[in-house]
Image 1 (cartoon, rainbow, N blue to C red):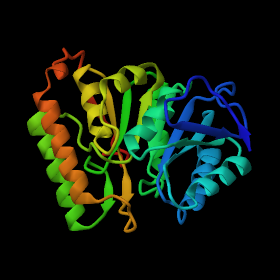
Image 2: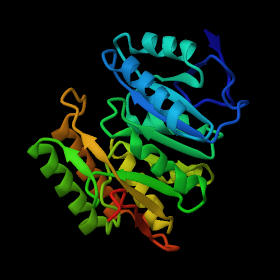
Image 3: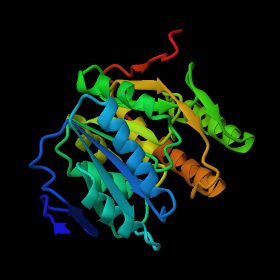
Length: 276
């Protein structure tokens, strides 16, 4: 395994790759944060790799970010980085999805940075509609939405209720104009990602919401893509504790003066992939 230095890495971050990442040209970097995913990681990365190879006409790289796993996830990820072209591993010493995304995105030279959950709950056919508007310059941020018209979602009533309630709270408390803050399927244009990361303080699950609110308050265009989404019954997310932490984050943003940013357009654009 080759150790690679790719500029100044954030504290607590180690990197492995089978080639020098930033010296290789690519348009899109797709980040997959993982924590104790030894059962699903290999199959998911192989499936994602096949999809990118077959259906994405842009140069791409996949970055697996290990979030302080305690099982053999890091070893599996190293093997994937050795065996698969355009796959690398980055290790972060502390947990937190936001921390993982910040570590990968802040050092990326890509024109578009994206991420998806390792369980691939979101159908990968939505990937090209997610990144294409950013590469074209049409929008600054793109998100998969399970609540937009044209989406098809399979999940239990508890998760459905919490998701809809949370997004309703965002509309009331923070005047959110996007429909789904927490879907693990997002992309940001490389020329604005540093500005957004500087505005986000959360390092865990609320990272997504804070990023989108930062983009909205700055008048950036948020492109929504309806997705086909199937709930992962083996999810590592504690729904109740995560929801409570998110509500504390909402309260923090609602009371913070630093969010009073004059908007440029506040446009949220939705693509109906069903042709309606």
